[in-house]
Image 1 (cartoon, helix red, strand yellow):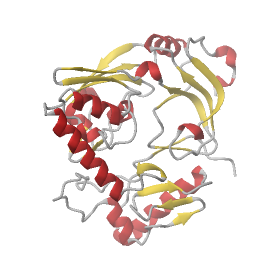
Image 2 (cartoon, helix red, strand yellow; image 1 turned 60 degrees about the vertical axis):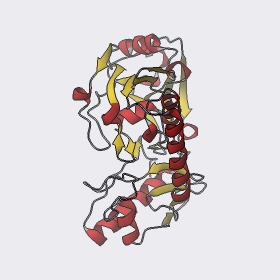
Image 3 (cartoon, rainbow, N blue to C red; image 1 turned 90 degrees about the horizontal axis):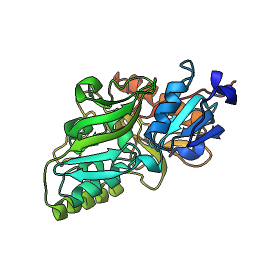
Image 4 (cartoon, rainbow, N blue to C red; image 1 turned 180 degrees about the vertical axis):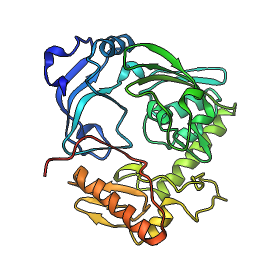
Length: 313
């Protein structure tokens, strides 16, 4: 990659670190180094950097690493991670405008304080940037349902608004422009009583803690539910073809490879029990996909994003 030479990279006001280990920035605590990690000071620092950066140098916007496996060989790219200058949360009537680095849980709580119902975000790990890009959702609600608009910086350094029509929201994915960085999003939720909204979120947290391995080192749901069977979290939810169910049916609850394990508490959670490599985690995931296909003919699709290069053999 061209980014190996410090001289070709633009000057920045934020932080630009060479050979930054990414394991410490992901929830699974695995992964090799990025050629560079850039933490912009503000949106203009980001735009100037992208505009001046050699177009041949790949960039990868990274959130809080809650839904990510970085492979052990690291990233031949400039990884862009937004920090404190991008985590503001402002409410206005029925809308909330949040910086991409604002945590989903914080947005849900701030919205509830203002009587805006974005409660589904409360138990989703990660930040608003990732929630928009991946159309995160639970309890029958998705980011697409509340999305108004977002501000992005394109790969050539232009700042512009992006609409829902452009994003083409689908289950757990969007048509986000390649190389662009989402910096903020505006969401609109129905009005509600703040006390009732906070009570609902407390109930959601209690249910999550009872059913998911929240104290283990995981990255949330490993695989998407088979088409047509997305989770709602409601009492009348049908569990016939949930990802965890087909994993159970294939006998892979608790399966292990190295330091990686499919959780015994919730079999669609891939966890690092200590000392796992990215290869352990991804390899176990592929073992599960193979077993599920052999058992049911269903091909599970990864929900966790896997990026970077494996170590040379």
